[in-house]
Image 1 (cartoon, rainbow, N blue to C red):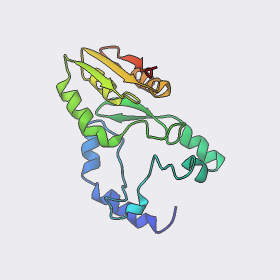
Image 2: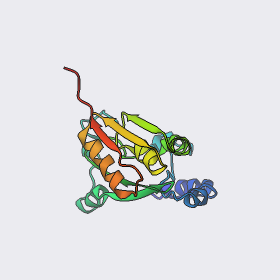
Image 3: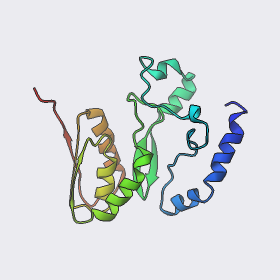
Length: 173
């Protein structure tokens, strides 16, 4: 890591000094500590779907030991819900979009006793949060089997009062 980044990272962490304990109090241990645009350095913002090269991971290779560590699945928690994540994987997007936390929080508040249809579910973050919060019935629908597999793993990580359903959407003929 460049020495020039260290003061930027320290300032970003200082700016979140009150946020991090609040998140930990709600049993959340996943958060963005640095965001280039927010910190005034937009060039330092991660880009997940840059298609300027065939695969940006090829243009930014890691040494084998770091690649192995980055691809190792890990468990993170948000509002008491466990999710599987991996720093690098075969897909292009992170397995849980942290910027949708407020939406998951609202779903958890409003869904107890109700049904939830989670379309374009990706890794089923909203559906798993709904099931954990006491939804009566949860259906997750996505077109990518690999994403639904991560969603199923997310369901297994949690003690859920209802078993979510996972539906692979098939393209129309």
